[in-house]
Length: 471
Image (cartoon, rainbow, N blue to C red; front, top):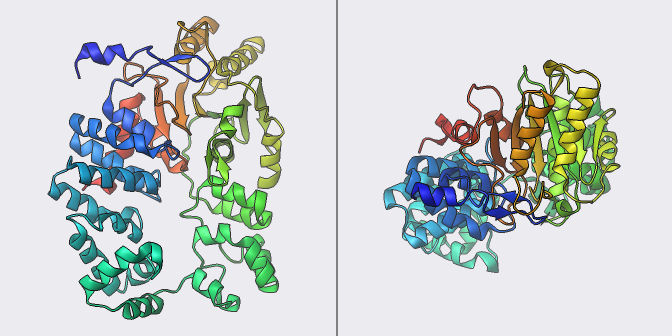
């Protein structure tokens, strides 16, 4: 794209509340990265963004795609990954060798049922070879069998084609999966709750089936919870995200949720004064992802960062809507969650009022630069209020001006997208001291902590230019 057309995107966008922003970051790679984790409700926009990113840099674009799928150290966006890759295959924007190299990473970064997308494409046989090898390898057989589609009408095409490839009857296929699988779900279906070792069940099952375990195996499950609280046993948390655990607080067993929360991987680092700002405006409740909303996700991530913070803002965060509120957290997870939710206004998205509150507090109390946040993470759908009219400044430009006027150095700002309804960008690659990230996983924090360069491109590259995404 020409420089003229790139610059035409600046100040050409508007939020749902009329604030000025940009229709592009001026980098197709950053645009794709920013949207990759925030488009669950509109995944259909992603293939075109991926194609534009490919034209800028094939290697980085594919790395973003792999990072998008990575369930443990990336964004964990299953549907988005499948949508983009399948559409790219159909549109033939990737070379066959490139598709095969991406396929080689799926078992490591995703799940074995991701291979379903290749059925009916020219890569079907290659996908089946991966699955056959996984079923024959004792190290992966159980996991492959767990995720392979069962003999059901909705999986008819896959089962028929795979059985033909592997020279199996449907009965043999069903028997094979049953023999190799040893899942919680099988024991639940067979009403064999007494055979479940609660300390070994996968993290998602531990979060999802708490009420069922309590109802069907109450005595054993209660004993497990007591042992868990005493630190005598463990709970898995490697593949759950903070919002999964918050959901358990609301609808499951709060004691189990509290222990699983403690067991979440810690992606935080020492040496930074990080303050989280969670958007609790009305629009955050509009975006539903199943039984959770963008509000749930933003609050859960803010709680996660605040608790694991090592700087002076440990156990502190800010929420903002029409009015901002500072919140000091205390107690267990349920209590902390309630402390935040008491301040949910469902009002407008007045980001400027939140920054006014921070700077006014600093100036009024003669706080030094060291007393102020060195990094601010803004969890939001980014549908901010206008700053000074429909043709005024962006919210970021207004924040820069406020800090300069107040005599403070502006902290590093992170715009963390939890939704991407209109596809606009708060900043561009011309801006420094700021980043745009997206998604529901705290693993994203890795790219935001440490490092000398802090801008949209540098943060994106830090996230994806690692050995894990060599393809």
